[in-house]
Amino acid sequence: MPEPRLDPLLELAGVTSGYGQIQVLWGMDLAVHSGEVVALVGSNGAGKSTLLRTISGQLAPREGTIRFDGRAIGGAKPDAVLTAGIAHVPEGRRLFRGLTVRDNLLLGAYLRTDKDDIARDLAWVFELFPILAERQRQDATTLSGGEQQMCAVGRGIMSRPKLLMIDELSLGLSPRMVEHLGEALIQLNKAGQTILLVEQDVMTAFELSHRAYIMENGRVTRAGASTELMADPTVSEAYLSI
Ligand SMILES: Nc1ncnc2c1ncn2[C@@H]1O[C@H](COP(=O)(O)OP(=O)(O)OP(=O)(O)O)[C@@H](O)[C@H]1O
Image (tube, rainbow, N blue to C red; front, side, top):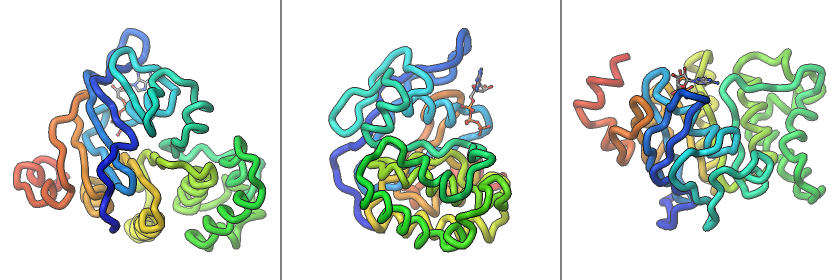
């Protein structure tokens, strides 16, 4: 994996967020540097998806700041966040029924006008996931679970994001498929893509990332280099056995 640069591309400081009366995030601090893969792990309900929704503009932070690429983006609408360069691959893939794989992928580029580059990026997605090229005329919702995840990640890539956020890469997939997707993510990162990965499978998360944050009840409880967290007995006792 390439060495990350030092300037934070994404920086959260003291972010609180939630739904109506329910507060989920309680002062989140987090940084992602250009070139890094950063994993966010933690048990069910820790607030990982809520954090991604708060970054991508589906939820507005109640307190704290979110800076991306040198600008404050906290509270910006989803389209503005996407235009600023953050793509969010949601949990559950959310592909559009009645649209082909190709059209679902092209939807990721709906805010772009650079036709030649869009064609080049589509070819790149097909290089990363050759099965999608084979199935490009098929209704995307008839793909297998793993292929749907490839299509969802591909749709994220099609916005040519500076930061690609993926919620639960491995959810419901076979170990072989998770390995295949993981290899594609490593290839993507080697090509320069910065990635923030939410992942319940802690081993997969550590293996794919440079650094990781462990979240519990809406707060960061541990953070560090993934290799160090993996080797830490208190972490392995708490997370790697489940
Ligand atoms: N739309 C919503 N309305 C109200 N509460 C919600 C909503 N979505 C999530 N929550 C609550 O927010 C808390 C955090 O959920 P979130 O999905 O962010 O956790 P998570 O860490 O991603 O968990 P999981 O790994 O199970 O997806 C949970 O208590 C959940 O019930």
